[in-house]
Length: 258
Image 1: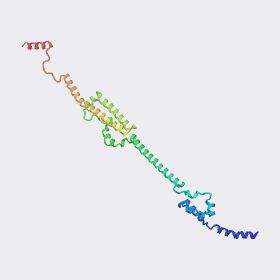
Image 2: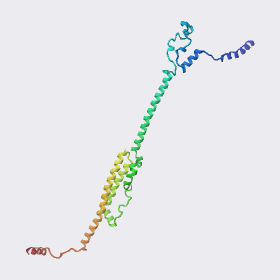
Image 3: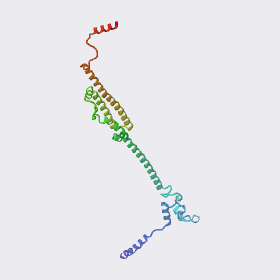
Image 4: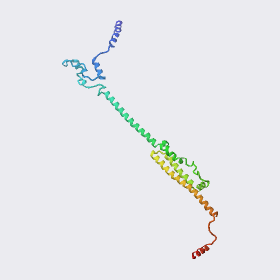
């Protein structure tokens, strides 16, 4: 028993040494290279037929697979499955890039439309910053500006008494509310600019009417003063008004007879 164990222990290293010897089979090497990266060359299909096709190893190897050498079975060949997968990956990547470009375009369009419609950016509009902000400023501070600048106390009192100032404040307040709505409502930029222009036109007409009322107030006060002085006989009328109507009629008739 001890001798068997000893012999086994002596043979194990020898067997392991032979097991580590690499196999150098050119048929296997050709097949490995052919399947991976080398050209599908029919001349490298070994073993070959030999003289008059009498090589038995050829028939044992390729007899049951006569069409195998004719088909390119490389995974990375022109029609190989791996090549097709790579082509499919590239096609899918192109499709993904196309979808991404389309989605980016939609995103940019959505952002531009949101900026175009959103009221958050209405104060950043170039036309508003350069022109309408200054032209419509009186409407933005409606009721905070002294509209009686340059008028006397009598003229102020007259405008307050006859309701002209109240009318002007009411109309200005309406235009101010419309301006605030145009600036804060979700609206496209073109409609917003048109609303600004319409409000500016109406405000100019309103202010022109108010300016006319202020000028008329000065004239009406002057007429009222003149009428009051006449009623108080501060300015005596020319002519003799002590005669009766009969005396006046007789005087006219006497003149007509002459």
